[in-house]
Length: 184
Image 1 (cartoon, rainbow, N blue to C red):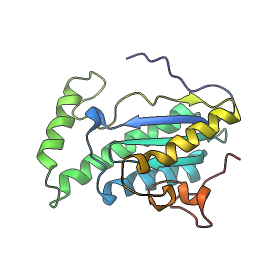
Image 2 (cartoon, rainbow, N blue to C red):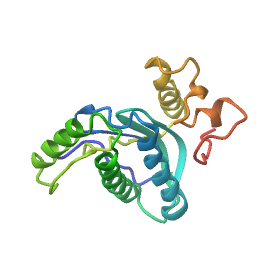
Image 3 (cartoon, one colour):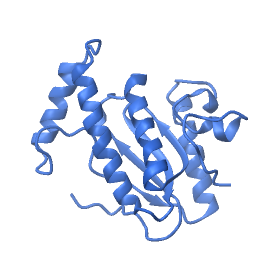
Image 4 (tube, one colour):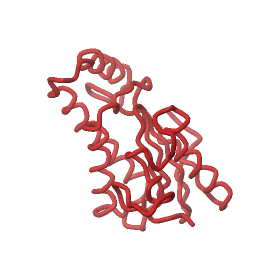
């Protein structure tokens, strides 16, 4: 499926959103969010991902990111999504405490069978929806939007109280789970 959103060639950070197919709340458990965190950490150390801000919600992920030039952003994202999809599916299948296992796997299988780019399952929607942040105003708007997501969802009162985001790095003296290169 073609999309009008593409990673730019410049050095500007991109606001990237990627979602679980059918917006399934498949990332509701910390165990699953931790897989995404570990993969992002690997991409930072081994693939040249420069993470400026991040957030993992129950059914989608927002990043403000760029590349240090070792790999193109689209390749980093492709590898990250492929790895996390495989790991998340395996973890869900093997999680005896996952009460929604059969339902989620059925939906992932149906999505995979409906998409000729997959053999069996599809975890992530294909599009990354990257938006190149070419001005400080754009960057600030997306940064605020990203960090306010869990507040607007009613999960926390303050952005920095949400563990799976870079809000701690921006709004407190504490470091979050991943190293962040501040936008400003």
